[in-house]
Image 1 (cartoon, helix red, strand yellow):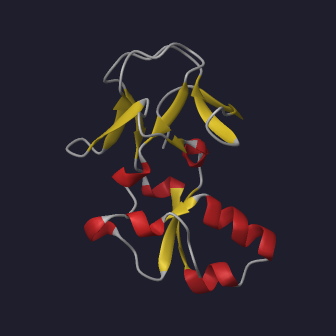
Image 2 (tube, rainbow, N blue to C red):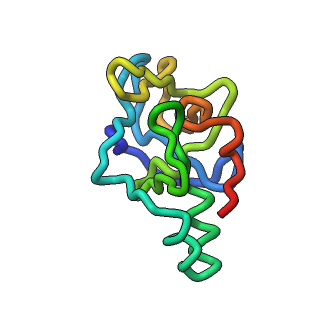
Length: 130
């Protein structure tokens, strides 16, 4: 779940992105995994959806990484965290020990919040197949 004031707007990275609505300090917690904001959907459940909804679910879902990787199912982010785009030089960093994404550096209000998808996805999961 997103822990800071934010908004969704057009992204220079791709499509829509997630932006901080106020300045953030380096190390400030931005996102924490919370099961109440993440749906787990089986591939069979996704296949039963109308085609347009299937595409939306696939666009904003992931299978996990390592021991948390799902087989035959995926995580769908139900909050605005689904709009966080990938960057090889992200504005957030994953802190495994705390289970949070934090600001990678001081970020002025209006900064796009990006992450490295490799923190939570295996490379082969960049494109889903049902």
